[in-house]
Length: 363
Image (cartoon, rainbow, N blue to C red; front, side, top):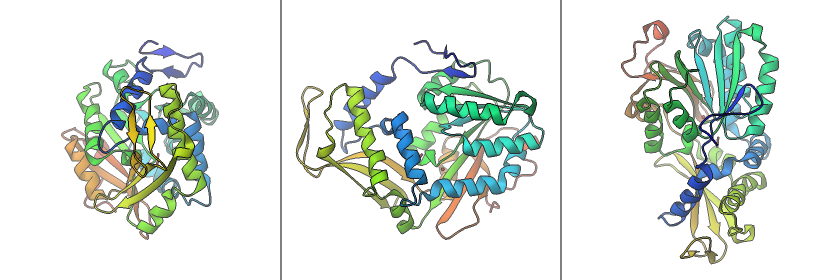
């Protein structure tokens, strides 16, 4: 597969690289031979995993508050968010999913008469095609909103971005919602943001990032409880996907259970697979032995405060110019953070924005 193949759907561009499956196999082996052991969280996000995550999101038994609270913030502040997006901007959503949140922002841009180009990046071709079809119905050519899809991972996108695609000649704002940044450690998050800067592909680079700042431990535990069947199904799909990548059934469902806990020191929920018995994984030489009760890290969800986000962003060369927040402080704050490159000449865009000290995220 070339670096940029076009799928038959005119508005969908395949930017996947040939090395993705190989990279995952290498990452699985590396993670299982490291201490502590871990599996790449990307395994959770195939089409089946995305469908299972949607079941988590809508299940009444889960009370998946991050999505609900983020929608509340966007509905409340969509017009103000749109005012912060210059006319002609390329708005690129990382991990676009069903685009329901981006649609609210695009509608506000349409009301304000601002032509922009939206790109949804996702690993699921099924979700992208479905979402683009809905977007094309909501935003016809006369709306001034152009919508396109990019099929690939974050790494695929950064490789594509490094080629300085001719589509991105204007200012670019990355929309990174669903607390996706919280799936990374603080150091990884800062490094990830810095990779966009180091690409040197975009002069006017900004981010709008969804953050789950909940500090109520009981609420977090209810939300991510791995004993809930829908949550467990989502997590266990990662093992199914690992078997597909490895092309052998080394992970048998009956050998594993799931557990998780909130680490208040780092403000992070951590989910794990736990071996029910001694397990031998014989997909490599020598075989990998997992002892009964041993944990393998699956995914995390950080609940960072605004101060922590400011530190992460500044380490990557960004300045947090504004934050749109929810009005319910019972569980801590859900907010969208508007990040701009440190040193950028943003007077035109930021003239009306308060300093972050005065202001007020797929798992």
